[in-house]
Length: 222
Image 1: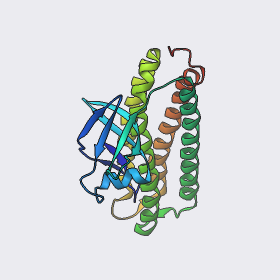
Image 2 (image 1 turned 90 degrees about the vertical axis):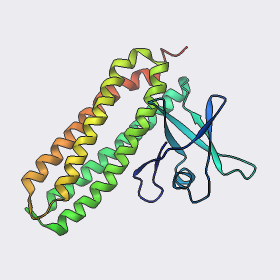
Image 3 (image 1 turned 135 degrees about the vertical axis):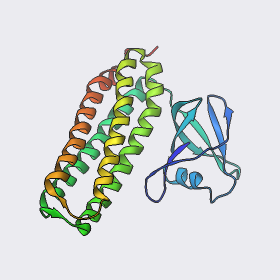
Image 4 (image 1 turned 90 degrees about the horizontal axis):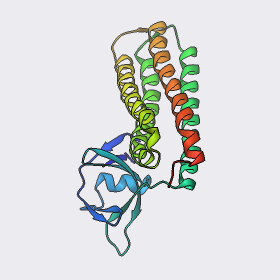
């Protein structure tokens, strides 16, 4: 199970024993201090990996004093498809604003980036990268349900999954650059940032062009 760390937003992967319940699962926490349990109390969305396949699930606290959650796997109908399309645009808008803010900060930084400036930029990168990684992890889980409802989207979804891996590697490269020792020229940092930003913009544009028409039209749903 992958949850968003309640404190940092960083993806947290935990092996959790789940029990099948109808079309979803039940997950019980051994105690209230279980990190994944605390995460879901703050952000009640989880990505489950079952037999190697990711599924996104909505977590609902159990009643009757039981410490755990009912995990409802995403199932698409026309209304839910439209809601996902709208939410996708909201998330992309937030990520684009974060990219623009980082670009503006980078443009205003000194020509030679010393350790202090790099730590500040790295702090912003960590926040952005954590949010983006969680966004993509949740998307991977949602893609399973989308592909079931819209089989014709399988090639586009396969490409998007591959792009998620590419983006993840690019973010790691940027992390390493910002955590290095000594001064870093603005040209080198800007080049790496622009590479990541362009990859993300292309990814967002492809995703919107290929998923939104189906999600909003619902033509492939039974």
